[in-house]
Length: 249
Ligand code: B12
Image (cartoon, rainbow, N blue to C red; front, side, top):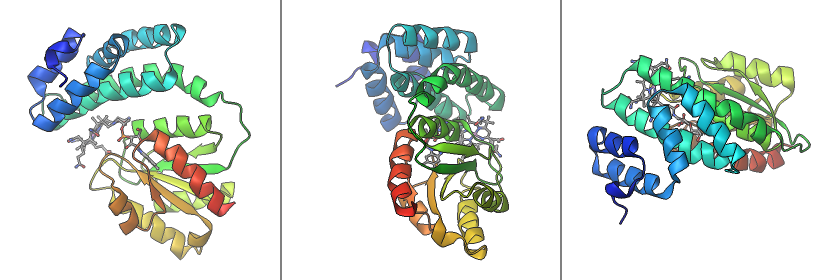
């Protein structure tokens, strides 16, 4: 079994020791950081520490050293944000600290995005993506957008706090058939259902397919709100978009 003491990065070891309390989260993170390379641990540590300059430098160095963009995204940036999320939930850090880590994440993503977007394939279709009304979280949505663009989709990004009417208007304007909704708050998840309803009211429900995602969203919840599919992460989002694109093309 993976041991805490086997994790190369001392900062990560201390973070797990000091801030993680739930046995399943300790076990998951010990296993995760034992699996990822020391270079990815360093990126995760700098992100947790909110050090955007170091995240920027380490991401560039890793890419120059031949590490894949996806590996950096999953094993460095998202892994680090996972710890930040737990510290936030437990009240060890607050909104300003999380924003500083989010800025560090953006510094790393700035190098990764062009690589993921440069696959040069013909557009498969247009996806309208937005975080639902009342919700300002956009890191996960932006990762999905990067991956969708890299996977050959044209993406219209409606940003955060997107009302049902804005989703409908964007679909009409861009003649799109795929919609991706992101929600990170249990209080905003019901706005996914409201958006699906708005499409029914506009007589457009049959011509579009809905994808839903975000940390608190589950496949069951997706079914309940009348979505056509749920994706657990950005890779799953692209797979789902490809599957649904076939249905509406
Ligand atoms: C960063 C963060 C913030 C930042 C957001 C910065 C930004 N630009 O996004 C700031 C500090 C602004 C913030 C604010 C708030 N936050 Co906040 N935040 C987080 C945190 C720590 C990380 C979220 C994140 O970026 N994760 C990393 C990304 C990569 O993961 P992801 O979003 O899940 O996305 C992945 C998948 O879900 C999927 N996916 C995402 N979207 C989609 C869409 C589709 C279509 C598909 C297929 C897939 C998909 O793919 C992504 C990539 O793999 C989470 C904790 C957590 N563990 O989630 C809390 C969290 C979401 N926040 C929380 C709270 C409470 C708040 C505030 C209310 C705090 C406050 N008191 O003000 C405000 C709300 C503001 C608002 N109205 O939205 C709670 C929500 C609790 C709940 N039950 O609803 C959480 C869970 C923390 C906690 N445990 O308490 N937050």
